[in-house]
Length: 167
Image (cartoon, rainbow, N blue to C red; front, side, top):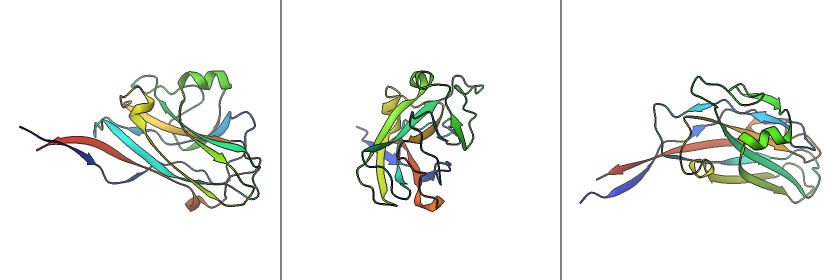
């Protein structure tokens, strides 16, 4: 009888520039990552993890949201204002975003202390009903009242693709 084992791919970096991303009171402005294709790897899931660092003297009791999105079709066509590249974006509206963004992590900013790193981790397939999208990306937005930390290296988002092997 074969034994099923989980296999994790090596860490891969999600390309998203979070340094100095401006605050957005309505959560429509933020940063989009470069889209990641699952066409050749065919991962059944991906563990996404990292940290986001707040800027100087953030407002207490504010939030950093991390969302995932999928392409509309395999052409690919991107939803709303997204273009599949590492860039700042402003959604048409919260309502439009609620149709295609999948909430992955909520980072509660619970202090006014500058430069605190807030770690996170989540399963990507879980956010899409247990199935990995063919192409996916992330969108990060926040309402901390100040720009995120200005040093790019103080923000890290990586993923490890997951497959199963049989021995």
